[in-house]
Every structure is written in C-alpha cells, then in structure tokens.
Length: 114
Image 1 (cartoon, rainbow, N blue to C red):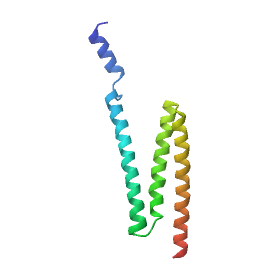
Image 2 (tube, one colour):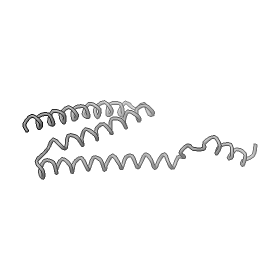
Image 3 (cartoon, one colour):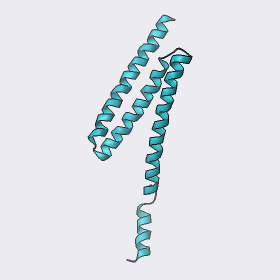
Image 4 (cartoon, one colour):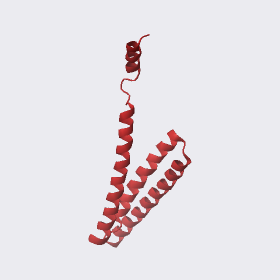
C-alpha cells in the first residue's frame, strides 16, 4: 500500500468526523462562551439589584449558567476521568438546583404578594 492509498483510506474512514483543529477550536469556543455567559450573569446581577430592584431575576441566569457548567463538567469527567471535573460537576449541579428552587420561591412570593 503506497502513501496515496493510505491517505485515501484514512479520508474515507474519517469522513464526517471533525479533525484536530476543529476539536481544538470547539473547545476554545466553548470556554470563551462560558466566560461570556459568566460575565453576563454578573452584569444581570448588577442590573437586577441596583437598576430595577428585582434581585431575584439574577437567580434565573445563575441557574442556567450553573446547569451549563455542570453539564459541561459531567461530559469532561466522562471522557477524561478527572476527579476535579467530577467534583466541579457535582458542585455546579447542586448550585443550579439551589438557584432553581430559590427562583421558584421568589416567583411564588412575588405572585402571593400581588
């Protein structure tokens, strides 16, 4: 088998699969997206607390952000078997649940007080 045949066979086997550059780019894009999401959550906390005086609105953004982080770390743990990722996944998932319950309570109290 010559070089060209090996390359052709490799291309057929890997057709439709991302190459290493795409995988690295996706990883970097995911990290940047999470950083931007965190920054938006911080901005929402400031706006909801100081501008519109409805701090419970920030709970929803933190709930979503922690759920995203938790899910991301679960996938990373599954593939890398890193205990750090497992601990982070558990903490973020628990925080997402805490924020969800807190948000539900805040909405309930808001509705009751109307």
